[in-house]
Image 1 (cartoon, rainbow, N blue to C red):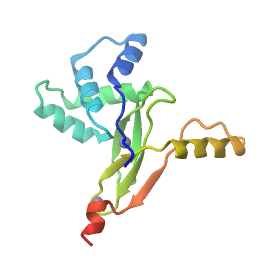
Image 2 (cartoon, rainbow, N blue to C red):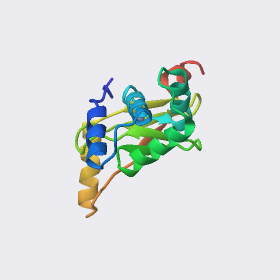
Image 3 (cartoon, rainbow, N blue to C red):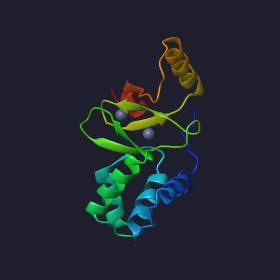
Image 4 (cartoon, rainbow, N blue to C red):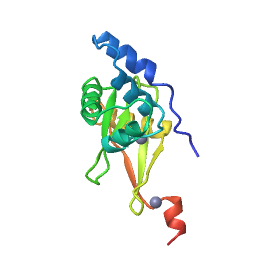
Length: 151
Ligand SMILES: [Zn+2]
Ligand SMILES: [Zn+2]
């Protein structure tokens, strides 16, 4: 199975934030550390829940403000998988780490995957069509291994 393990994002995010004149904030640092400990996207609610139970308490308003800031700086991307929830995913520097998702229609699990060949094919298609691709969304849907075993 191809690994979707990502490089560290915290240092990159902090550098961008410092460059934009943001001061290091406890709440922001907690959100960034939490996101960087995931291998995939989380909803705002999941982020809020995990930070509420953690050592560094971060209030809901701070979580939402920080998520907005990080999205505005393109450090986080919003991931919509069609269940009405917005998830937040780390964005790495261009050409480093980048993954897509498989969504299980039964349990709703989000499974990340990456594939260099897929990226190459998408770039080739854009080139062939004369398009300047700035991003892309690829979501596979169906049953995950656990759910397909149980039907
Ligand atoms: Zn993901
Ligand atoms: Zn499943």
